[in-house]
Length: 290
View 1 (cartoon, rainbow, N blue to C red):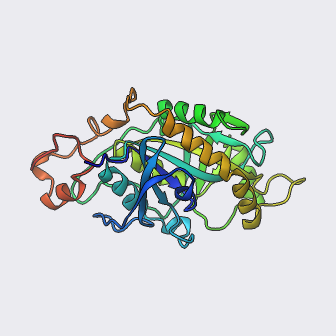
View 2: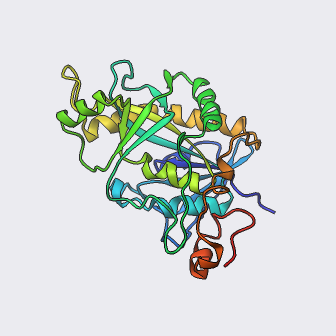
């Protein structure tokens, strides 16, 4: 019997080509929220089955707003994934977070406007707690794995997500700095919130690629600049993921898996059967019955 993948990696499409990944399978899934961004690739890494998902699609064909975040998280959950590591590019809004550094954030500021932010609706209401939207326990495990590489790492930061696909204006960038934001990107929201609704631990390995556009003595962010830095950091991401798999522990001391226990508010008798069926893979082991 093949064990399910318990670690999910959402990032670029190249990671699942890393050396040492064995028994590779490609799964073309469908979900009640549509198809994921790309087929999910699973394989054995350091003895652990891992699932890889290319967030922007194979060949990077989806702008941040078009990413099917709900389908991505639902698909990983349905496969048996328990923890999700997001590998993301980000701009720095702080002098001390330099291009090439890795940041493990602990807070998120959602500044997007066009994305579905919840699995719920259609007659079923849930208010999930996201005061601390990133799993502290898994973030610590991820930090330890990144520290096993040569990367300079920062733990603790507020990650603001903007809609995109354009980069910020200088005025916007300076406003975000005045708000106390640390790093900026386009995909962490609503991904992290959906992971919490799905009962998954979620942590971010953010690769600083630039100083956004606020830093007058540095080159403004461009796609070329982002790609150059990400290519340099590919080996760091691979090493960290490998260490994460090597040191894997199934113990989950956090409350992420129980996020829905006190979040469901709708009268069970009022929940449409179709909605229950759609959300079945996300609900607690004893789902509400109409």
